[in-house]
Amino acid sequence: MPIEKRDVISPEGGSTTKTNASKPTPVTSEGNVTRGRLFVLDISGGRILSMLPDGSDRTAIVTGCRHPDGIVVDAEAGHIYWTDMGAPNLNDGSIERADVDGRNRTTIVPDGGTFTPKQIALEKKTGKLYWSDREGMRIMRANLDGSQIESLVETGHGDADRRDARNWCVGIAVDAARGHLYWTQKGADNAGQGRILRASIRLRPGQSAATRADIEVLFDGLPEPIDLELDLDGRAIYWTDRGDPPRGNTVNRAPMDAARGQSPEILLTHLMEGIGIALDVKGRRMFLTDLGGSVYSARLDGSDMKTLLYAQGNLTGIAYAEVSAVPHDQK
Image (spheres, helix red, strand yellow):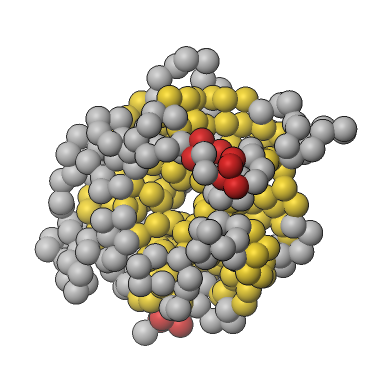
């Protein structure tokens, strides 16, 4: 389906139409007002944007980032975490943390602690961050303070393997209740080598990240899958694909427990190199970014597509969370 630019927010922030009436504002058990917000990464501008889910109240909360790619929100603690890819040939990737208003910025995984970190996921119960390391050809994990870094999956080793994009891990999501990791390996550009895989969060005794035998290939032959998200209630995987049309530049959905060979459902098309995806399962909607600089929203079935922002730079990761009101909200 082509993108319909309804309720479009211009680069200057003005809306071309009236927005829908606002929903009641949630309140936490401590009495703090919470609001849904989007956090969006602009890799070309090296900044993190925060905004309301309709694209309004947009502000840059962090600047001076080095190639930011993946972002996740710990709403309870009031933190955002993001990956900095660094230079792909220098093994100098890092991970940073800040408050949801951008203050108290700190580096938790230093330069070189990971090679080229991409999408990042939070597993709050055990206090772990998970991320894909593209040129590092790994799925990695650490504590929320960046300590105890470990590799859970290693798809290759050395420069020769690193040149093979089939080994590149890009997107990641976690189903903690069932103890599973999901990730994408994108393959070469538009080569139809992309895959979505699943494995246990825990390594079996006697196996290493490079030798584990429990990895399942859920989908293969994909154009170029990038970021993914899970609807755990609906047992569905959602992902972006930046390959060429007709199957690329799309948003896709498939059952988490799909039978081998089952084809994914294409929900949205005509993205400009789609990258980031975030689900608001409670609100039955999703949010998307592309390298063309746009932010989109749609219902989980792909209907009611809206372009919220455009010409915002080159956008990568996106996260949605209901967070306590920050000073910018209260102006």
